[in-house]
Length: 368
Image 1: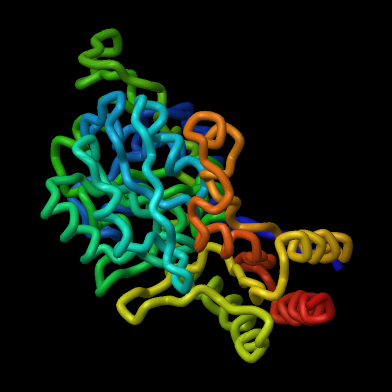
Image 2: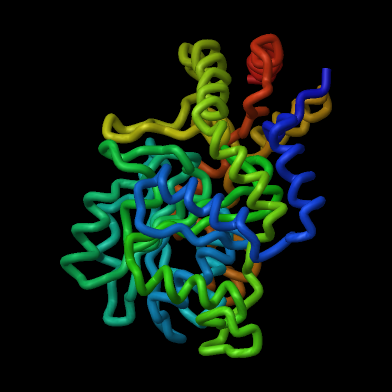
């Protein structure tokens, strides 16, 4: 049995929508972009949605839109995909890491204020694995210290915090639509915000710095961070199906949870009562008796059996260029390192069957 780590949920409706765009001859800067933006904006309840080519480019545009200058600092988490820190480096800023909560795996808000300096300009929380960060506390700190809040919701489309959608809780938020995400556009992302100026700047910068339709008039430095109508046609259909897709993913997560909740050698991410998780991946953490080497051996043996799995995430501060540039070292963020050394991401997608979940759990138990 071969069970992949992830798989997009594509139906004939998505295929038909993409083919229709291909036949139209209008492949970019066409009506499908606005259709997709309207769908995400309405779903999240924000004033604006700006389609971009990836979650990474969305984060970059927001860093520019808030006016980050070289040497400025942004407080964020080391337990994330590296893009949440790279976006700060793109503009000459410095990501300042704060360790994580050992149960939710999100940034530990109790440790943030001690890291704020006169150069701090923003907080960049990550909604890790579809669990929204503690946004009330983050917004309170930001208001008290006059900081901006960029919410990295690339893994959290559909998640909620006290009844509000992920991405809508800071000055702006970003979603990613890589094929392993809740919905996909192949490659792509979306900025959401209630801030008119942030939206205006991001729309301009994604389109080579243009402010209007004049093709050779550029008001500011910009990039080609556009998302094509082909991608947006796929995304618009996925948004029409989002409740169905999220429900299927929740069912797969329930199968895993039912089979592993009484296994003392693994734990799962805690979801606070005020949060509604949107299932991006299904990650278990091995008990502290297991070493990182034992975890790696377990992943290797599962893969040998045809079971796709991975370690989510490797700590950002221990990536080679962060060590070289900032002198980061093991022990700097012990909670993050302890969690990261023991996590195993199991196969997870909307099309996974109950029998496949049974097979994965049985194989995992044999290796524990």
